Length: 412
Ligand SMILES: Nc1ncnc2c1ncn2[C@@H]1O[C@H](COP(=O)(O)OP(=O)(O)OP(=O)(O)O)[C@@H](O)[C@H]1O
Ligand SMILES: [Mg+2]
Image (cartoon, rainbow, N blue to C red):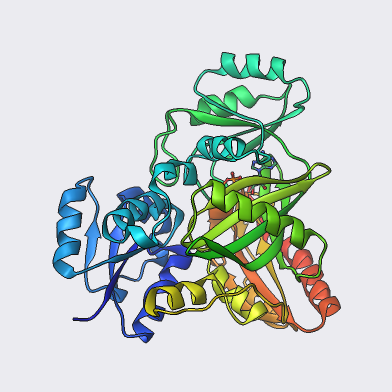
């Protein structure tokens, strides 16, 4: 019988897994963890990739029986929303290649993540989880060094409802507005995470782990900007060579983070800020880096978390290693500075003249009404620049930034 692998929430970069497994002669089924995730990520769902699609309704016994019947043994999370269910199923069907189940929540709940780091004596961001703003005020008075406060959901993704405030700004209102609402992945924000703001440079470290050994598959530097009232809006992502001094610092810290979070198997996507005290984790997702990132990693390094994942799940004696930097790759996110109507119907043609553009993805069309970009869900698109000449890539980015300024006609 054909080997069948289950992918939980095969969205975002998770949509790339099925076709690669098919190339190796494996079959795939999809499990959708909840209907809200389908609303958020549904555009990237390719139903025809799967011989069966299950919509999980909380009945784990039914799902387990179905998987036993189909002979499914291997389960992979496709996107952040699928991490916990994939963990649960994987620990039932293949505990020998699963992440430690006793700390499954530390891989999703950002407060438990902080606690796990602290209990392993690793630096973590000063944080408190509560639904009571008086407790936050008390905590701030006990921590007078905190001058800026981050307010965010415990388990969301895509910068959904992340607010960054000076202490005297109206963080209370932001917290009140999101408490009790559902985040983009369908969880109710019954409490929020309040964190010290870390001022530094933010990096991505994408890894792959197997039998407890970790491999670094790429390191990138994020540029995030303030867009009007919105903080941490994606601006660009630049792949980095291993020769940078931060590489070793990040690698050592992330190895320890992965151990603290019980990650021994599979892909992980970690966001780390380095400030004058060193590296500190923003969060780790125990899944592939989203947004099709493995494809861009392959442009840069010839391999990715995804290539390792496929080797690991289809071969008995797969070999893994750290990445080698081969080509410059910069991803430029296109941001709407204001709400309005997209007026630049020749923007696409202009972008096509860029020397180093390898992929141009516009998520909106001319004439569309757009919101001011506030998070990953409201960017207008992105351009992947890649080539051997870094100065020419930098020049292309400058052109995109100039065109971007005129892309939206402001509505009064
Ligand atoms: N404590 C903090 N200090 C400084 N910046 C922060 C902090 N928390 C969050 N940020 C900024 O906000 C971004 C989004 O936060 P976080 O990753 O926790 O949310 P998310 O919804 O998972 O977003 P994404 O999916 O885009 O990573 C971070 O990548 C970082 O740029
Ligand atoms: Mg994040």
